[in-house]
Image 1 (cartoon, rainbow, N blue to C red):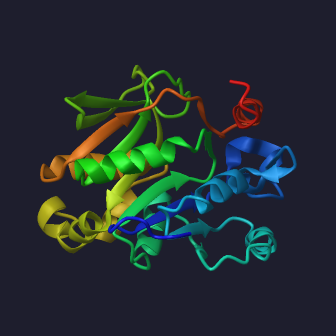
Image 2 (cartoon, rainbow, N blue to C red):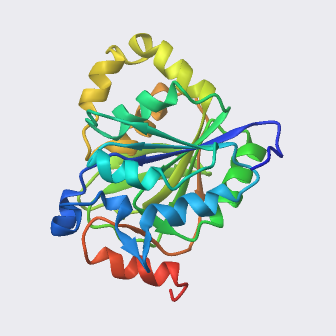
Length: 256
């Protein structure tokens, strides 16, 4: 991977969860390592992004079934892929903070390890983020229906002005989000001043059901950062249950 832009870029892939909704499929295998077409789900993500010249390093945090991950990690020789073990993965944001302190790049792209979509949109989203000088950019799909996360992203002139948790929401799916490292650093250093709580309390508060949207919502409430939405209309699936694997396979085979 080569650095082609003045702003260095890292990918953070969260893959530390137990994947309980996958039932028997994750009894002896972490969800991102479930195979589609004889290839682990996370392989499609890593191999696609590894080829992008705009990416400097890929950071993957893992936890559940450590021995299975270590077998998988042994197959990777690239120094640009950095695996970090989380012995106590409380929630997504907790794991993110644990790894973020090791990331030196100026821009961080945050993606869940069980997401499947056309990864070519990554370059378009990253270019948009850099050209627009956003602090945070969120790649969204308007048409996707997600049965597990009910979030309303309230957008005005491309700016995300609010995120609401609502069972009657439009269920807009998020592919990934992009955040500048300096924003994360300011958020952490000034946490007590901005939020009135400690970082650790926030980590514990941000349970799985809130996840990334909780972090973005907190940044919106600070009312200091440029947080923009960029929309794409390509199929996306967050693999949560066994039934999702079929749709993921169709996407990867470019049949939908």
